[in-house]
Structures are given as structure tokens and as C-alpha cells.
Length: 193
Image (cartoon, rainbow, N blue to C red; front, side, top):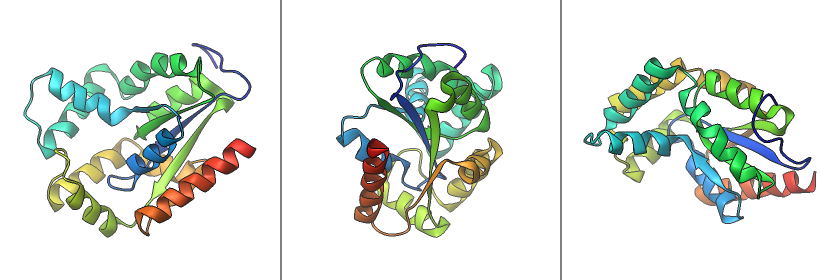
């Protein structure tokens, strides 16, 4: 760890990644229910859209994320998030970062927390992801073209590589209960390790 608070022996930071609609938010919800604090990279973009007074639409969130990366660097969200995570580590053994999307972000986190940092990938079939996105009704979700554009944008940030190299991979091709059980089992194993 090069900067920031040095977590205690047991303190760990996990970042969950996955393609749009894979179930990152559901994974985060399971951990949050156990008292693990969750910081969301997507919430940072939603807050920036509101701060700029922009009308929420499927394309605007990606445009704002891309503009931030272009102006401040590919790792801008990660850099802005690190101090908040360090503060949470003062009182928690585990902190989850929800919505890791780029290799530049991953590098920031890895440099910050070293061996105390790991990634979790949620992997889901593309058609199932699109179906779930259509059902959830978030303002950043749109039609098939918006879905494909978002997939390509996030792949461009290195999301495929993050998924491929994740420390833990959880498949989410069944129902919500199945994912919740997989998340709970992983968490139990983590706490027993």
C-alpha cells in the first residue's frame, strides 16, 4: 500500500465488476444486509449528472462518465473514492466497492491496498442481462442500442479484462434467490478463511 490508511490484518477491500445488468447491485445488497459498507462508483456518476443539472437519459450517464475520464484521467473515480474507503476501513473489516469498470481504476485500488484488495466478477448471459435491464427501469437503461453501446463503452475501459482476471467469479444465470445464496456462501467462506 503506497498511501492512505493501512488496514488492520483482517481488513479487506473488494471491488465487484460485471457487465451492465449482471447483478452487481444485487451482490452489493447482500453484503450491505450483513453490515458491510458499500460505496458505488455508479452513484458517483449519478451524483455528477444531478450536480450538472442534466436530464437523466440512457446516454447521459455514459457521456458524463466518459467526459470525466477524458478530463481527469481514466482513474478519476477510483482516485476520488479511495479516501472514503479508507475512512470506512477505520470501523469495518470489509468494504465493498460496487461497479468497478476499468483497468485504470483497478490499478489505483491495487496500488492503494495491495494484498488487502481483491476483485469479484458477476458473470451473466447477455440476453438475460438485457432482459433484467428492461425490467429494472433505471433512468440510465434504454433500448437494445443503448445496451449494446454501454457494453462496448465499458469493454473499452477494460471491463472484459477485469472479469477475466477477477479473484472470484460468481455466475448469475438463475434467479435472484440463487445469486443471493451464492453471495452468502462466498461471504461465509470469506469470514471463515
